[in-house]
Length: 180
Image 1 (cartoon, rainbow, N blue to C red):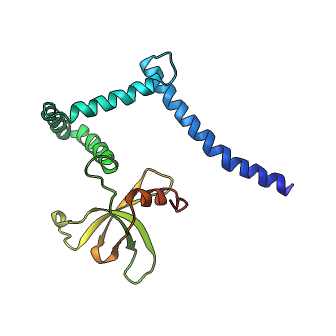
Image 2: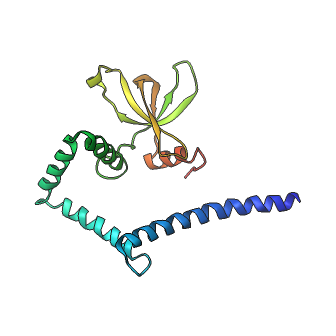
Image 3: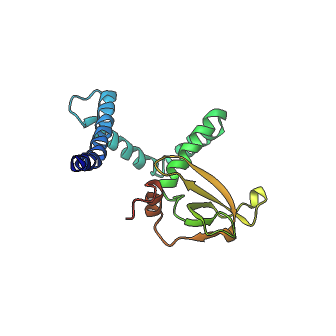
């Protein structure tokens, strides 16, 4: 009976991530295909990729940069829209683009006399604008979640990690399981 239980759980370990991934991809394809009303499965997804790439090409064109800046300025000034727009823009910009925000992984000592450390990313090295010249802003992502906490700590409690930011993020989000 123990062997059967062991095989069952090993089967779960293989099937659940595989089926869940396939299901999420399937749902994305179906939703996008329904949005565009294409008959060929996956055509909506391909169209979405092409549209996003075309918009990226147009946005990087010298002639349209002014229009993009104008739209950005308008969205950044509207009261409720500003909060949503700038938050999403900053979040996306932290992962892609020229100014990636999670490229400075660090260990943070929870207290100067403790050996307990957390892993995070320095998001702002100068906090002079809020009167904290000797502190840095560190973002602490949460495991298995898209949330995290921003903490302000003295600079001397932060130790840089000599690893690629993407690998450190994968390590944190996986709860320390991923060791790529």
